[in-house]
Amino acid sequence: MDVRHTPVVVLAGGTGTGKSTLGRALAAEGAAVVDADVVGHEMLRRRDVRNAVVDTFGPDVLDDEGAVDRRRLGAIVFSDPARLAALNRLVHPPLVAEIERRIDRLRRDPAIGAIVIDAALWPQFEPRPSVDLVVMTTAPRPVRRQRIVERDGIDSAAAERRLERQEALEAFLDDADAVLDTARPRSETRQALFDLLDQRFGPGWRRPRPSTGV
Image (tube, rainbow, N blue to C red; front, side, top):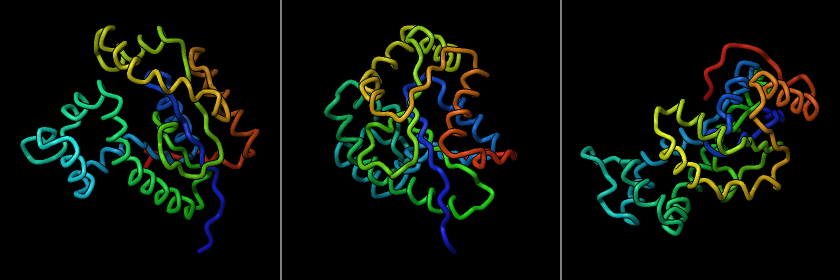
């Protein structure tokens, strides 16, 4: 079967910038959404990746059932940029390969008008899949902090620590094809994204249907 060219759009940006909300809005218009965070969790369950993580960080990162405990692993890597980079070198290549596999499969479905990759850490992926449009979402720090507090039920200090861990992402705003400020009302932000896709790909990417993502 010939694989047609279905636009592939990346929604990148740090926590609290609203990219997942926008991904759901695109899904409601018929786009298939690939959540890179979910794929990353799946990679940690793969035996080869799990073993490589244990070899690098030690058996203390495993839970009682022998699976990688993401909270324990995060406690090790998030306070040490070198160790975080080491983890990314283990996880990102298989993660990217799996995203590419899903893109290839989704392009064979004529009911799908666009493929969206929801990937907060897209700028840090190495290698990166070939895509048609990279949109970085952004918002003022106080707005992001309050969103995280309300979304996750944590206090402001904990939300601020999460923002600090992703400060490096701001350096990639200039490399994106488009930057979307999500501090405005949600309906305006959604319409701005839809208009951007209409301009780039025409209205054919819209195929409204019930969608739960991929």
